[in-house]
Structures are given as C-alpha cells and as structure tokens.
Length: 151
Image (cartoon, rainbow, N blue to C red; front, top):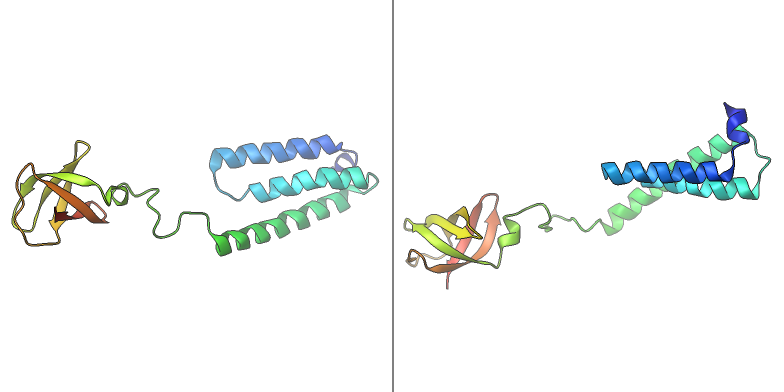
C-alpha cells in the first residue's frame, strides 16, 4: 500500500482533495475542509519532492491534516462563523423582531397576533388595550412567544 502511495501522481492528491471537499459540501460539518486542504498541499509536496517514500507522504499528510484542523478550529473560535448567540439564522421568531403584526385576539396582556398568515402567541409589554385587527410592533421573541408593543 505504501508503494502505491509513493508512486502516486500529484493529481491523485488533487482528486482526493476534491473528493473530501465534495463530502464536506454534502455534510457541512466544517471539519473535512482541513484534510482536503492538506491533500491539496500534498500535491505540491509530491511535485517538489517526488522521491519521498510512502510512509513519509502519509506522515506529512497526517501532520498537515492535524495541524490545519487545529489552526482552522482556533481561527473559527477566535473570529466566529457568523452564527453567534444573537444570530437569527435558524430562529424564525427572532427574524420577526421589528416587524408589524395584526392583532387577532387580546386578553388583557396576552393574545394572538398574525404575521405573514402565521399565528403567534403574543405578550404585550405595555398594559394598554389592543384592538382586534389593530397593528402592533414585535419587540422581542422567546421561542414561539412574541413580545409586542402597541403603536
């Protein structure tokens, strides 16, 4: 097996990198991108030093993959991925903050509002009366419950 690796063309490393990249895109784990980058770098290593043994190539790939994984993870921890705690990417209710809702029911402090034909449980932050079919502003979202304020 190591003889096969020692005699591989740099294009095999490029193909391996593309295959890892395709699996990364399918799984979106943000883990396989680093070994894929290591495989791509291995194509350059094979071009620069074509007489390396198979064991040396495997060792270099392992070192590159582990090193790039730790480096990539530390960069991700330091700079983030844009999905921090205040992100509303996967929180439909948080995406509604700042929107206007139509009051369907009001029971003296809580009720039901509608946004884009979807009904939401609502809690009023002020104690003023709300009119059915009136408009309110969404100020906060906590799970499936919206906090609203009269205009």
